[in-house]
Length: 327
Ligand code: COA
Image (cartoon, rainbow, N blue to C red):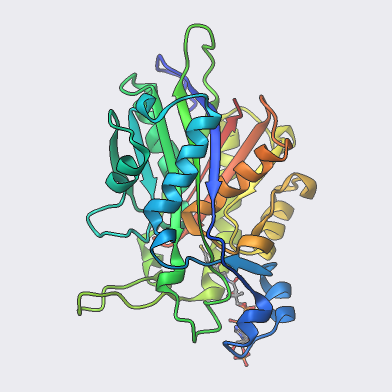
């Protein structure tokens, strides 16, 4: 049985958008701040630059709203058409949630809005969550946004972590299928978590009305990703009744080029199909998959009816994959 075959309404993917702060921090800039080099960072991670939030302008709410606005326009809709906004973020402007601010900025008055926290799996988990409301006929137009400003929580003196992360937001509009276009384009998915690895990647509450900076066991997280991500991609391909070579694009969470290369290798995927833009953006957490998706859509590389697998992985530990047809 597939994850998606028994209900009435299909899920369609009708628009994307993204936004990043203007300020760029290169590896060369970082080498002035901590004991590192462009060569070390680029060869170990594939990252050469990242966009970093600069003041209130680049709040999670503002970046998310910019990405959301573009996705709504690309879908040919207005904010008033949106029924549900899911904001996947782990770096909320407000511990009570940021989705309400996004709703307000967008003027999406009819929508209900809430945050979803699943670290770098946030976009995949958000996609699966959004799809449930569509499949059951509850909502028609859903705006799903992945947005994170991890630069707020980075220890800029810790060379093991500060080189990895960047800020940004990406969004898609998901729409219930109609009689004119009855297809269900979300073809399969798999979500997983394992709390035994919870201590490997954290932004812990420090007990003083604030949080500690990001702490990470890089080697263990690397091992986890390379082992677990291929499994969920294979599972969602299985539910979709597809094989790896059927895909047009594979969009992994943009954490490390070596992780992408290893996963591609394990899956025996054509490397040319593996989307990569982390060289410019670093790891933008829940935003990385939709930013990459939007960049490939804008460039005309992703075309209607292309088959795409996405996979996110990160803190929790959490990981997941979805296979869908664009359009
Ligand atoms: N510049 C120069 N040297 C650095 C450095 C930096 N920015 N960061 C660490 N080093 C040093 C270490 O101090 C260590 O030196 P030592 O051997 O003298 O102690 C050496 O490089 C190797 O460190 P190590 O941590 O073993 O490196 P690594 O090959 O595992 O690479 C990561 C580190 C973080 C790039 C890698 O582990 C990784 O990408 N992990 C996955 C992280 C991730 O993707 N997290 C987000 C998931 S959502």
